[in-house]
Amino acid sequence: MKKGTVIALLFFAGLFVAAWLRSGQRLERGISRISFFRVEMEALDHLLLSGPHPAELAKKGDKWFTGDGHEADARAVAQLIEGIGKIDSSDLVTRDSARFAELGVDEQGVKVTASSRGKPVAEFTVGKAVATGAHLRVEGGVYRVPGLSPAAFSRPSGQWVRLNPFDTLPDQVTRVDIALSDAAPYALVRQGEKWTLSLPAVLPAGFRFDVAAAGSLVAALVSVRAKELSPQGEVPDKTGLDQGDTLGFVDQGGQRHELKLGAATE
Image 1 (tube, rainbow, N blue to C red):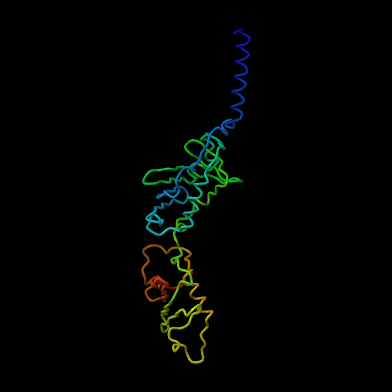
Image 2 (tube, rainbow, N blue to C red):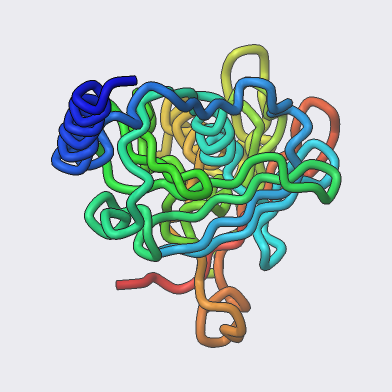
């Protein structure tokens, strides 16, 4: 090879390296891929989240529970698992760790470890949202993942907890017992599509039974949802639950459910 040819090749090689350095990591984009499509989402039984809102979720039977033993909100868990299933991208943004903070995939991000039968099957860190999705880091690579919502992976701890205690529908209720702290107890029973008092004689003289109001009470009872959990360790005399009202109902299968109302909060 002639000396001039060697010099020319070295010259063009230098130009290529300079162009690569000026472009940062742009040449990396599109040559790598991350996907969890092959992960069996139905087989996941443990989810560990760390970051701004740490949480632990474990599956027992067909239900999920939080790390402190409360039944988890099935919809919230389903959204998280659905989010894992959506992770698929070949849009590699960078491998430069100096940019991790800028993209929100350092310690400020949400690190997710999804396991099945004691073995991690998906590990990644969710970063900042972008116009069409979010940044996500797997090992040393940061990808732009379309359709990914960071909110599905990061919630205050109380939002992972199931706050609606009953699964029963209003038309599945056959009887409701109401025991008020300042009045005589009474019961509602279903007759066909309507509700009536089990003992009509308990109505005071001159009062008429309101069928619509009874139906509204039943619907409100079975669909009740808490705003948040009370701090653990609160004693009954401080919550008023030791002397509060009690509403119980019986479903079509004969199972009884009960709701205790305590003192009013702020």
